[in-house]
Image (cartoon, rainbow over all chains, first blue to last red; front, side, top):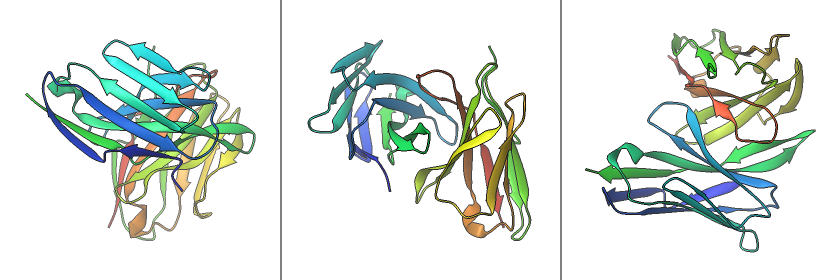
Length: 113
Length: 111
């Protein structure tokens, strides 16, 4: 079963607008990660936020984490056409002797030039 | 620093055949994980190897297997291919506690 679930499934915006994606998860976590995937390619790690952090910034990215609600959001400010991709959240699920990132189904973002 | 390298990029196989995919992690990374990505199921964890030992395994049938060599390179094998095995297979390596670095994947099509 999916640990993280992104919302919305699809998002279409104009260049320059902000894009917000949300992720909900089910169990306690050590950290939550966001990844980007361009069509048919591998995933690119964007940002990791630890369970004791509430907000983190990286360039035009802002991630928040609310462990009481088991949710996270990814904000991309001043979006560009190059931001068009699928975005996934991943939480670490305890499996055997280590933590394995478990991914949601992703949010497909289209940024129109 | 070279990234994670997966070969081949594309593969077409016939039902019943077997296939071997290769993954070379970032130099110094000892953990290699494999994922299957399909439109219907999303990203599903297959297995993780660390220092040549399988540390974790996802919920896949025994037709899916893997191994890791002393240089950390990893292979995964799928025997008796089924149409439903058509997917993008992603390999990821990591060190320490930070995010995984993914390869570009191998697109497997079973016909």
